[in-house]
Image (tube, rainbow, N blue to C red):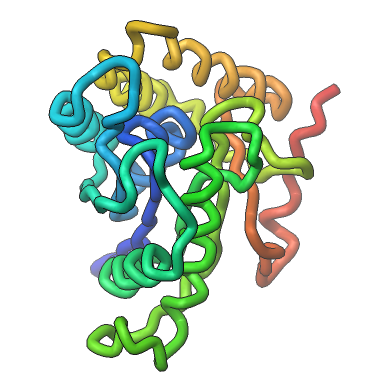
Amino acid sequence: MKPTPTSRPEPLLAFGAHPDDIEFGCGGVIAREARAGRPVHLVVCSRGEAGTNGSPAERAEEAAKAAQLLGATLEFVEFDGDAHLEVRAAHSIRLAGILRRIRPTLVLAPSLEQNQHPDHWRLGQIVRDATRLARYGGVAELKTQTPHAIGQLFFYAVSPDAEPAGLPVLIDISSPEVVAAWTAAMEAHASQLKTRNYAELQLARARVHGLRAGLAHAQPLWPNDPLVLDTLAPLARSARRF
């Protein structure tokens, strides 16, 4: 008897304000999902033109290399420019158009905590609004696209200060292959590592979150809405190891 072919997982869509945000904030999750067969698409909303190191062209090239290492596709969206991002309805509508095109089940965006780069939390708000607008059939600017409702929006934290209050969902990224791909993707942003070893910082954070759960490495995500499960089975495992 031939085995029944398994369906391909539905897409994961991740948004970042700058060329390295996704890699540093949730790159391990991206690498894990891509290696599990899930299509992953990254949307970056500036070229890092206000950064201390690296030209916009250089940073865009680094982002393209990092996306390839993670196993994801990549596109850039130009809004107000690095360090000038504003929360606008037009921005959310534009991202809602991407949501309708990619039709993801899962969406990742920067957390809404304000003690971080202002572009991060503002993009998180823009994405949250976009996930709602993508559902509404009457939005005039989106009439040519079929409405789409995502399954869940998760927030990621680029830095420790950006971690929201409350318990996160911890994603096990302990696989050596996943950690290696994630590390290589972070190191692809060589221009940003001139000031500080951000890759080491993120690996240390993942190590701490992993040790908390009895794992080698884990990355936290915070759900925008309550998680809905068909059974208690996925909840049988917790992070309590002390």
